[in-house]
Length: 121
Image (cartoon, rainbow, N blue to C red; front, top):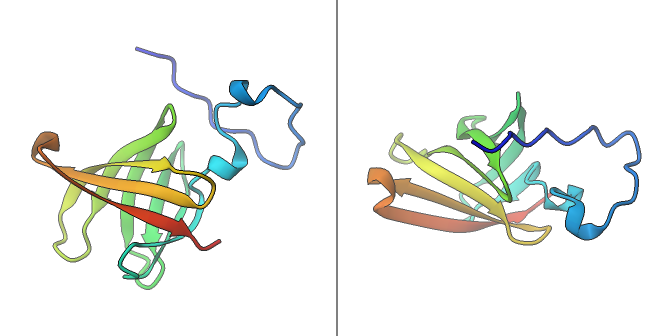
């Protein structure tokens, strides 16, 4: 199994300059922040929860992204559909600094759907 990726260091200390190719996660490529969902069904606040990321609906504070673990350039975990109350396998991946692709799959990946969320803050 590949070694787990270390969590990024706190932003307080200025990182030493490194070649762009060597930087695994740039600050701009972090999903931490507030995101608008595709159908404007409300914003989702993504934050650190332990070593993983979690996302909460801003209106209800309901957790919708559950224990998203870093895997290379994406994160994988579970997503909760607030309409049905069901949880699905999910991945999130940055598509530039202000867009994030959010996918959920049912039945072991046979049926997948996705949205592109836009960064609010």
